[in-house]
Each structure stands twice: as structure tokens, then as C-alpha cells.
Length: 401
Length: 227
Ligand SMILES: Nc1ncnc2c1ncn2[C@@H]1O[C@H](COP(=O)(O)OP(=O)(O)O)[C@@H](O)[C@H]1O
Ligand SMILES: [Mg+2]
Image 1 (cartoon, each protein chain N blue to C red):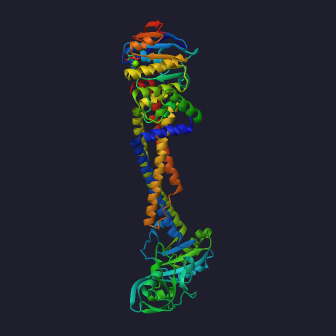
Image 2: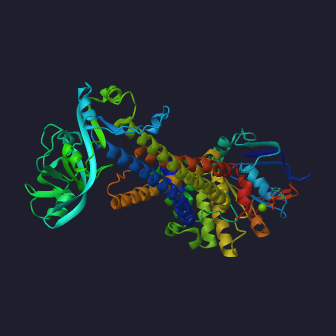
Image 3: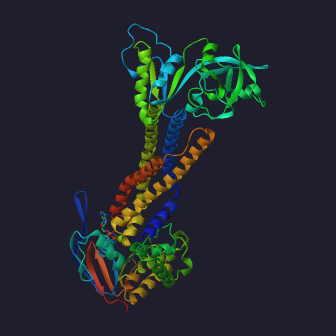
């Protein structure tokens, strides 16, 4: 029997018994679609989160005040509170060879007003390097000038949303606005790409770090960003930062240094595990579809006993009958998988339209895995019915009408 | 051409053994026309199934065309069925979802013949059994007589040497039945070896050789029919 004829013959029985075929296609399609959709969601979430962290900068190290519990070590015996990070702590890190740039960050909230408009806004005190380290772009004007970090200056840069709310369609450049009880002149506005985990830069007002410290009347920093020269420098930079701060804090290990790579890697692991888990759970529905295939094919074999007997009388070998029924199961699974693939990617696309921030491209491994699983499930569960068909006694099969 | 010697076919039902064939010796020469009669359950169908290699002997020997086919493998049996034997059944056994033409084509498809040759043979077969205008009809759109003609066309399309017909008129009215028998006799005149099981004494009387099977054994073997 020729390949095309095998397909033609099984095709005729798939079409001929369409109720049964539709049921199987449906079961297979649901299974494959759920695998595709769930893994796409998981993968999308992973790419979204790691993308957000990557967008923070390159080769970034983040120094936080306080000792992170996850780094282990003994808890402080005498219950001393962690020392704050100071601007001088930050500047001392400049001496580390593996570090290219240091950015101190002070954060607070203050009322910002211009003419009659006022809003409460996040105020971020930092230095000129912030722009480069965070890969930000200016929409208008300039960023903070390069100057001694200890010096205050009455200049500010606005996040796009703050600018819009205070100035509307008017130009903000050169205007004087009030932050808390001080006046600042607007020298630039940020582009709109600075949206990321942590601080939403759409809503901030950026001022020199020393000005922020005076404004909030506090010498402490929220955190320090350090940019290593190369990826390979990151571990050494991390150790050097810890050492440098410990020296300055009388031997206390009271800061936490996290590296961007480590954070990304952790999220990567978490979300990969999540994706595999939900994909695996969805794959169970494929196994259910397989059991359904087996049952329906068994019914088909008993329904078509006379036909099988006839095929044998016409000179079909047992192997031929086996192949015909296996092909039927395989074709149904494959078609179901194709439909499921369409459904799954379609659903993923719809989700992507609703949440444009989520990258909703089905991972190719999931596509292969889903279709492969569907096909092998169909074939494995098709073997028993096909063997039963092949083993039918033609005389008994033909005796029934 | 066909030689059965000491042929037994036993069915075991619980503790009881039924001899569906109970020591059959039978020789059929090429081109013979043989009518098989006998009471219901006497073993006529079993005999035909054994001869058609759909069933195996429990004991005894079977030689077909000088070849011992008693212990062939499934593959070889299927091949012999495909190449030398045609079946016609009481209940037609057409595949309901396939057209008349596709039903006739089925044995050629199974044999792996190329499409062009298949088409040619199928239309010739349909033509010679006056089915050309019914080629695209499904079995449920055909009368009983037409269905049996499709079944005969299917059996003959592979040009077998032997045609085994198990009560081919059993499900047909008198007219359709005699039409079918005339077709079969025509084929026999062209050299086909024809073995036909029938209940109808009138039909069996038309054959040149009549066999009566009783309790799995040949009770009467009468040569010399009407012609
Ligand atoms: N599959 C089977 N299992 C048990 N007994 C069978 C089977 N097939 C046929 N028989 C028995 O073999 C005998 C002959 O059957 P069969 O050849 O069909 O008779 P006929 O065709 O002459 O009516 C009967 O007694 C029948 O009951
Ligand atoms: Mg019978």
C-alpha cells in the first residue's frame, strides 16, 4: 500500500466518523493549546521580569543599607542598628579599580508646585552619572551638571508625567518651581523609557544629591549604584565594595551588595521552574486526551470489525491493519495538535494585546514539546487498539454484519 | 488446483469440541464450477474460509496450485489471498463510507498498485459489471443487486484464479439473485474457478459439480450438471 493511499484511506475514515474525530481533535487541541498558552505566559513573565532588571543598567551592583538575612552569617549580638549609607561611603567606592561609575541615590517625597499647580512627588537626589548608568535619555534640556556631589544646586530634572501635570503643554525649561520649601529651576525633562522595577522614573523629580539631603534633612542614602567595568569584574567589585564599606563602618558588615546578574539569574531560575511546572500540568491534559484516544479507537475497532475482516479477506496483512489504525490515531493527534497550536498562539496573542508589556511569543521548545507529546501520546495510546484490530480473526470479523 | 486432505477445523467451546470440518478430502480442478449445499451449521462457510486462507486447519493438509499453504505466515497468506483469491459474501461487506469505485479499488490499493493502472482497472471492472453510472454512489445509494455486483467487481478486479462466493444470493430477491448467478457463471466460462455456497437447490443444480456437506464432512459429491 502506498503512503498516499494510507493517508487517503485513514482520511476517509476520519471524515466518515466525524463525530468521533471531532471529539478527539477537540481533546488534543485543548491539551496542546493549554501547554502552549501556559508556557507562553510563564516565559513571557520571565522575559518581562528579567527584561525589567536588565533595563536597570549594565554590570550593575546595588548597595543597600542593612544586612540582608539571605546572605547568612550570625545576627548582630548586641542589637546595633545598621549604620546608614552616607555620601562619603559612596564616594569612597570610586577608588575601586573594577568600578567605572558610582551613583549615590537619596529618595524622599515632597510637594512640588508651579504657579497654582501642586502635586506630591517622589524626589530623587543623585549625580550626573545617573543618566549614563541607568541608560536614560533626555527628552529636553540637560541632566544634572557634573559637579562636586557635596554641593547643592537649585536645579531639577522632571520625569515626563510630572512635567505634563505641572506644565501641561507649556515649556518647562527654565521655569522655577518649588520643591518643599525650596526653589529649583527646571533644566531638563526625562524621556519616557525610564519605567522599571523599583522607582518609576515617570513620576520623579531629580535634583542633586546634596540638595536632596538638605531638603529631607537627612545625610543617609537610599542606595548606591555601582557600574562594574566588565561582567568579569563584577565578583571582584562586589568583594571590594563590601570590604571598603566594612572598613569605613568599623568592621561591621552592615550593607548588602546585590548584583544585577544574580538577581536576573534568580528570577530566571524561578520563572523557568514555574514555566516547566505549569507546562507539565497542562501536559497532563494531553495524557487525558491520549486515554480518550485509546477508548475511542477501541470503540472504532469494534465498530469496524467487519471492515477489518474485509481488508484481511482482500489481502491486507496484520501489519498493514496495524499501520492503518496507528496512522489514524497519529493523524488525529497531529491535526489536533495543529489546531491546538493555532488556538494556543491565538490565545497568547490576545493576552499580548491586553497586556502589551508581556512578551507573548510561544517558546519554540514548548511548541515542539507540545506537538511531540501530542503525537507520541496519540501513537502510544493508539497502539493497543491498532494491535487489537490487527489481531482480529477475519472469519469472526466477517461473521458479524 | 485445490487439494484438501484429511482436513479438520475444530472449535473448542468450553469442554466441548465442535468439528466444523470433520475430515474433508476435496480436490477442485482449475475452471471448475462447484456448488456447495448443506444444512445450516454444517460447515460450508468454514470450508470456504479454509480454502480462501482466512482460516487455518486444525489438522490435515491444504495444497493450492501445487504449493503447500497449510503453514504459511500471515504475510504470505495475505499475499496469496491478494493475488489468487476473490471473495463474495452474503452481506456484501462493502465499506459504507466509500463510493462504489473506491470499494472496487480497495484491493488494488492494498496491493500498492500505481494510481493510473488502478483507475484503468477499476473503470474496466465497473464497466463489465454494468456499474459505470454508479461509480460515485455510496453503497447505501445502491440496490442489493447493485451492491453484490460491486462486491463481485471488487473480487474480480485483481483477476484472481478462484472466486469463493458464500451465499451470494442469500440477501437478494429472485431477479437480482439470478442476475448475480449469471454473472458468476459467465466469469466461470472465462476460466475462473468458482465455488459457491447456496441454499437454493435450483441454483446448485446449475453447477457442473455439486457437493453436499453434512456435519463437517462431504456427504455427496455429484459431477455432471446441466451442461
Ligand atoms: N468462531 C466459531 N466458534 C465456535 N464455533 C464455530 C465458529 N464458527 C463456526 N462454528 C461452528 O462450526 C460449525 C460450522 O459453521 P459454518 O461453517 O458457519 O456453517 P454453515 O456455513 O454451513 O452454516 C457450526 O456448528 C458453527 O457453530
Ligand atoms: Mg454459512
